[in-house]
Length: 144
Image (cartoon, rainbow, N blue to C red; front, side, top):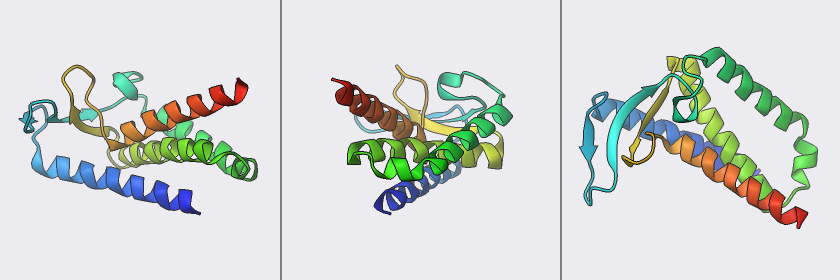
């Protein structure tokens, strides 16, 4: 149950930060944060990570739904996995749901965190990336 709470909190944080970004930023105009390491740049991303699969919203919605269904159908087996595995899965799924909400509501994903050397991203993307890295680490560790 605690992973469900963590997932819900991540989705809420993602959606809240996107709301703040859309209310306070103009598309394509950057706001430089103190230290000049991070910029805030509102981008409407019609694709997946790094802009791949641009305008493939129906496919991305179906893919996300399929992943959620597979996890739901395997929830009993997942419950027996390590805490790190369940956390990685929670992070990944929460990020996927955060971006799914955008796709269903807007037809694109709101991105706003701009490091200048990496494509603009959002909290959901950070959650997905962290979750995938954790899952790779856990599964790699269990095989050695």
